[in-house]
Amino acid sequence: MSAVLVKEASKGLTCTGRELREMFSAATRRLDRKADMINALNVFPVPDGDTGTNMLLTMHSIMAEAAACLDTDTSAVAEAMAHGALMGARGNSGVILSQMMRGLAKGFAGKAAFGPAEMAHALDQASIAAYEGISRPYEGTMLTVMKDAAAAARNGVGRDGQDLLALMETVVEEARKSVERTPELLDVLREAGVVDAGGQGVATILEGILHYLRGDEGQTGPAIDETPATVKEGPVVRQPVFAAPRSAPVEEKAYGYCTELIIRGSELNLGQIRRWVESQGESVLVVGDEGTAKVHVHTIHPGTVIEFAISLGTVHGLKIENMDDQHEEFRQMRRAPLPSSDVSVVAVVAGAGLESVFRSLGAAAIVSGGQTMNPSCADILNAIDSVPSNEVIVLPNNKNVIPAARQAATATRKKVEVLPTRSIPQGLSALVGFNCESGLDVNLKEMMGAQERVRSVEITTAVRDSRIGALRIRKGDHIGLIDGTVKVAGGSLNEAVFSAMQAVDAGEAEIASLFYGDQIDGNEAAGLSRDLGRRYPGLELEVVQGGQPHYSYIISVEH
Image (tube, rainbow, N blue to C red):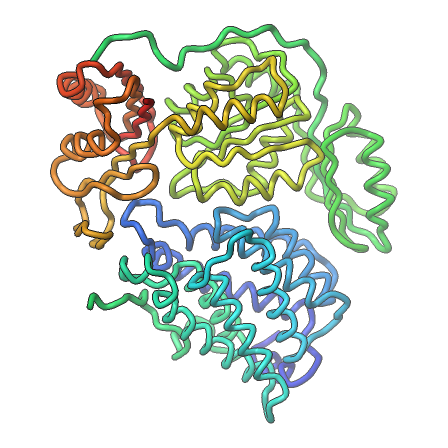
């Protein structure tokens, strides 16, 4: 629909799912242009400011599902977008955005078309769903911005001349003001001199919708400032710790074929389709509506599933993968045979060296990702479904991956527990406590205890000037994070390591494992190890090529 028609449609209940899809498509394009700016709004000046990227990738998943929806009713398109958000959610911001989309779909439920009153109700439901999805919501975040925008919509409905265009102008203006207020609500934002990145992302999405309604998409407009808002200042040689454990051989079995397809037809009964597909295999997922159904199943007979789908309509997006071949390739990558276990571990890891270490300790599947490249809910779900056991433990190894991991755990028929490891050292320590012969509950208890006995040191380079507590940081400084918090800044790279090790009382520690990143030469790492050995002669030290991006060194320190 052209911009002129959209303006006319905004005066009544003539905006349908087609227009809703185009509004969010415009919002996605605007978010694409602003993603780097939003990424820069990071509290810590570390190179993992990825809020904008996570929200953008989640929006791409939203739009992919919307494009596959043939129904033009608002409720159907909103439901498709909500499912796309669920499966594509990445990081904290992406997961919260997916909850907002779920609320938006609830608000539009049963609506073929919408106007200002329906939009206000949907925005209100988006805010409610986002708050309900967070166990301890904090104000001064994207939650607050969504809440304030929804309140502006509620208060604006019913005013004289308040059509959808006028309503969204009110909403966006309040979103802008709410973003500017976020440092007043969160001390950490005020101290860092930035506004909330997630809140800026929400405002950007709403701004994209507004510019579409105005017909001036691509123009700046007065609604949201183009630049990020800021706040004015008023060794001992030893055997490797991570050697491959002994384990029993696995019993061979057929895994069949991972089969995915889309059925397009009329009056599709998702319940009946799901029950039939469940009779054909495992890991069944059937979502969609009366016109489109997306099917996923692990089955020995994919041809039977395809014939069934053809009997209901036309088949699209067919994808069949031989899981037996995948399983054999996976086994060849392992240093030792797969353990015979009723419990599998899925770990999120970035870096070839670190991946090898996690596999050697018994991780059954690796999800590539971490800092700056948070995996989606679907990425983690696919890894969960790929392992042969029905009980799975997920190690996110990054605080920003934990929400997507928890969301994936709810989307599978398997029993999945997410152990909320917040760093690579925590994940490795937890995996050391994994016993393939123990059950899920016993492993969770042991792994939780193991992860709490390690301190995490991460050394990287500041990507911007910042102030954190008493630390004044300049772009390019070497900085050290202790258990996720910046505690060291300045000096040479090795001096940053020494200061960080002193901060974790390395002299009282028993073991330290140093993983060097993809920008560090092995000789350089060996030299650092010798220097650490002279400083801490009682410390057992291991040096491993981690290959991780962005972080020069990741150090696990065990007391």
